[in-house]
Length: 206
Image (cartoon, rainbow, N blue to C red; front, side, top):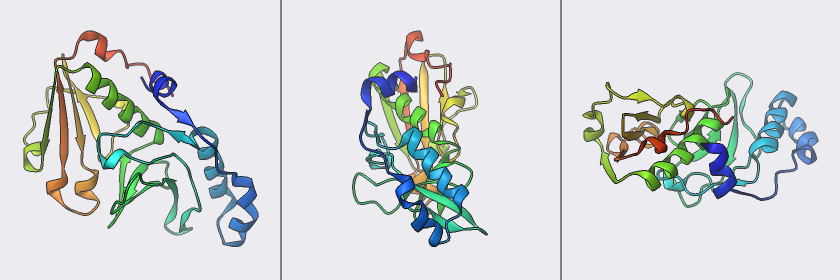
């Protein structure tokens, strides 16, 4: 799913020259292993511009790291990219590689950057393929019956997750509800009327 999505809909701009900042960051107390994480993130994802995600005001404008935040005791977070507009949270990569948001607190959305990209790809795929799209929010999301649906493992969901049925997909976005503690921001998108061809995303692309 994500491989073809990136090929067709993403563009790459310049990457952060991490090695240019290594000495300065070491002097600031950033461990070398953490700087290596920044370099690895930039090598794989740096400069990647994705189409807007359907929630979180579109996600990062460009996937790009910067000066890590944290401490040896707490762990280290990497900026994942600047917001597209003014938001009450920022996008970060967690100490264990999770992709998430930080506002009032740290909220992992997916257990990996790959999961975030797969989720954005799946949202675009579902929006093009569904005959009907329904959005629900707040308490109505908690009332959705997901027991008969199968989790979509490729998105590596934590706060956010996807499920699929015979001809449907359901995306649940809990991040903005959890991050500032506002349950009314809980959101779900239900994509109905999908054909069998809409489910050709079972093979992981990463």
